[in-house]
Structures are given as structure tokens and as C-alpha cells.
Image 1 (cartoon, rainbow, N blue to C red):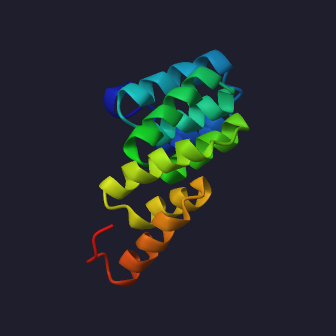
Image 2: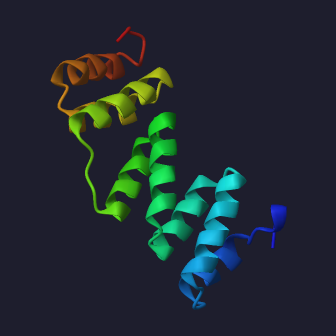
Image 3: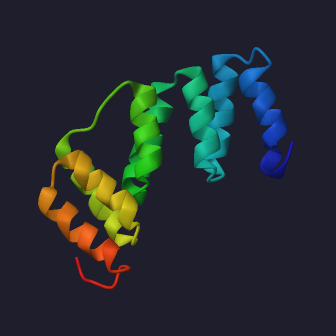
Length: 131
């Protein structure tokens, strides 16, 4: 066990893929990882446990952070898709953090062709234009 009494990478892999860890224990690990700010580790535990509430929390965190890739992973795990407005919101969060490629992807998924064109121009100029 590592920091905060959490499993290190190898132990986590055994918990997830080798040992027959109960859903209850996986949720417990996921919550502890989440409290420690280890979002991806929490996601893996919640996904393995099919813990919808935890996956929804991570979806909200990903959306608020503009983390388009994690957001997509969570949607896939939940077997859901987001509406266009949700994609636009996460695209705006990603843009505010200068995550231009992620923002572009989100705006594409949200159907905002105007923002896509503006972002493509900005990315092509090395990020020196205003969006």
C-alpha cells in the first residue's frame, strides 16, 4: 500500500484484474482514490464495480475540469451519450484551459461548426489567435 494507505499500481492491477474483489470493496477503493484526487484510479474501480453513482460523480468532475477524454470514457462506461449542449459546455471548459484539441473535439461532438472553424484556425496558427 502506498500513500494514504492506497494500493500502488501493481496492487491496484491485482485488485482489478486478478483477485476476485467484491463490488463493495471496489467502491471503497474508488471512493478513497477519489478523495485523494486520483480520479483515473477511482474511475477504474467504479467501472469494474459497475457503480453508477461513482461514475456519475466522475462524469461531473470531468465536465467541470474540461477533461474531454475522461468524460468520454465515463459516458462509455455508463453506456450513455451526452447531448449537444453538454458537449458545448465541456468544450468551453476545455477552451478556457487552453486545451484546444480537446475543445475542438467537444465542439465537433456538440455540433458547433462555427467554433470548430475558429478553433481550427487558431490551432493552425499555433494558438496565437483569439477564439
